Amino acid sequence: MSLKIEIIDDFLSIEDLKKLQSLDLGKTPDKQMNVYVKKIDEKNNISGTGMEDDTALKLQQNYHLKAFQLLKQLNPEKAELYEYSEFGITDTGTNYNFPIHNDTPNKLLSGVIFLSPDKSEGTKFYKNKKGEGENSIEWKVNRGVFFSRMENLSWHSFNNGDNGTRRVLIYNLMTYDVKKVCEIENVNHHIVKFKHLVNPYLYRFFKFVI
Ligand SMILES: [Fe+2]
Image (cartoon, rainbow, N blue to C red; front, side):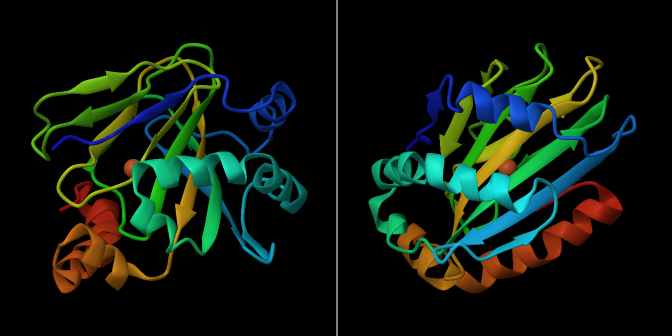
């Protein structure tokens, strides 16, 4: 079985694209990454950092149906678990490598939309955690890349070279019901929960994940 990946060019309207490209979130130094996430639920309660609340609300209005359709197509069972959305801006400084990972189980639909600069590094998918069978999705401004994570399938990573700060919009459809996710994926809930609980610490102190 291989992971289904949806690539959608010109995902955002020009207006939304320009707005996110021009957000001033400060400089991101070499070898560092800045992550800002806005969370928005079905009642439009908003929390988090990064873009203005109004911007997140507008993104939710403009793209929720499109994203939800994608999730229904990629994994109809998981679509039923939807509870909230995340709109994140990730600024990655030059010379940065993020390790191969599979995304946390609370992400039902994982999306990335490439924002700036014109030339950068896209997303790389792999057959396994060792990094075999690379499938590199080329960087193109306003290209959206979407998938529905699977514990043993959705291995991916990204990096940045020396073309300046790499900015992407992270667009995830989320749930709190990780137990149900594990049932759908047919994987052990306790093991998965443990892995994703320790991963942020492993990454912070040792720059790797399990
Ligand atoms: Fe990821």
